[in-house]
Structure formats: C-alpha cells, structure tokens
Amino acid sequence: MKSRSYSSRRSGETTSRADFETARRAALRAEALLYTIVIRPVKSENGRNTAGEHALETIADSTGGAMYYPDEASQLDAIFDRINRELRTQYRLGYYPQPRPPQGTYRSIEVRVRGNYKVRYRKSYYSGGLAN
Image 1 (tube, rainbow, N blue to C red):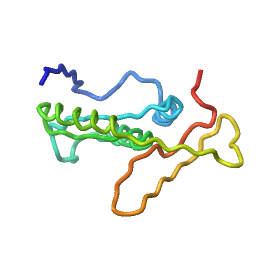
Image 2 (image 1 turned 90 degrees about the vertical axis):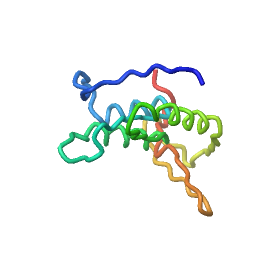
Image 3 (image 1 turned 90 degrees about the horizontal axis):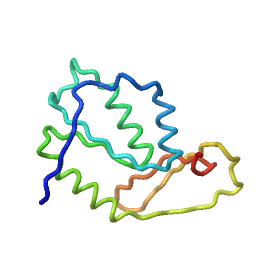
C-alpha cells in the first residue's frame, strides 16, 4: 500500500465570499461528483458548529456524491479505497426530456429502482450544459 499525505484544517472556512446556494449551483453546473470527508474529533454535535458540515453533506448529496465522517485519519485509506471502487463501478443513465427545458434553468431528477437497492444520483442538473 502506498503512503498518502493528508492535509486538514482545524477551523471552519472563513474567507469565502460565495454563499451556500452559489457553491451548490456551481457544483451542479460543473457536473461535479463531490465526496466530502470530515474527521470528527468529537462525535457529539452538542457544542460544535456543524453548519459547514451540513452544507457539505447537502452539496455532496445534490451531486450524487457522499459524505464520510471518520473518527480518525487512520480511516482515510479505507474511505479513499471505497470511493475509488465506487467511481470505477458507476452506471450512467441518460434521457431527453420532452419538451426540452429552456437554456439556463435547473431541472430536478428522481431515480427509482425496483428491489432492495440503494442508488445515489444527482438530484438536479443545469440545462445549459457546462458554464463558460
């Protein structure tokens, strides 16, 4: 197994000028699949500011990615291996909506499967394609 280097920040992001919705829409426009990882030194939410974590979880879910909460850095290799396996075993579905949506609008998506399966998917898409 090769060694990996990890960086971490001990405090919340304080310099961004983008709000949550702007960041979420940017991720959707970029057609990004976001996986977020927060190492929780304290498992209880009491006394912790978890707003940033909830925002990351929402954005990850919106893009079809996932959020991971390891208790310590030693769990990161297993998480990265899981993400790697998942990215190599994806299915891509496509459809052409009728009528065609106007350019520059967001459209909701819902995917349902039969049986006892769990599926993650992008919850919406930007109809204008990639932003310039």
